[in-house]
Amino acid sequence: QVQLVESGGGLVQAGGSLRLSCAASGSFRRIDFMGWYRQAPGKQRETVATITSGTATTYADSVKGRFTISRINDNNTVYLQMNSLKPEDTAAYYCNARGLLAVLIQFDSWGQGTQVTVSS
Image (cartoon, rainbow, N blue to C red; front, side, top):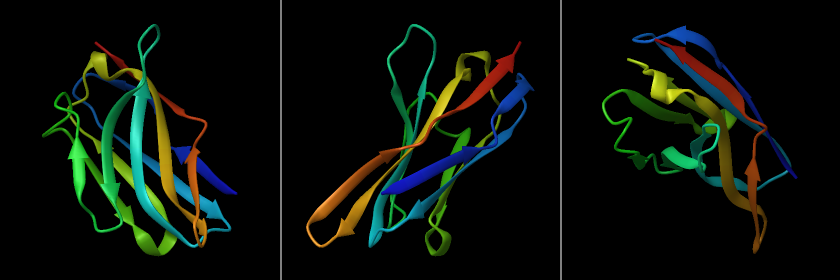
């Protein structure tokens, strides 16, 4: 199994910054994809940013130019640098990782989430 542990959430004022981290551990062959998602109360979970093992990235339109996703493959860690935070960024942020446990056996794992609260 693959375990994902997120950290770095908290309370920040509008315009501030936070950096989220997600470390993957367990027995797996490789991670092909990692991403950050968020869910605000009463809303559906949405994709924030994703990154592949080849470092190709995607971002939600609402965070482009403010958030940066990066990955260190050697330690299977993904980061989300969040700048110019807005109250509408308030949500629980979840890390996701997909890859191979073994030949032809894929995994799709989620972290437990970390809360980000942006005050106005």
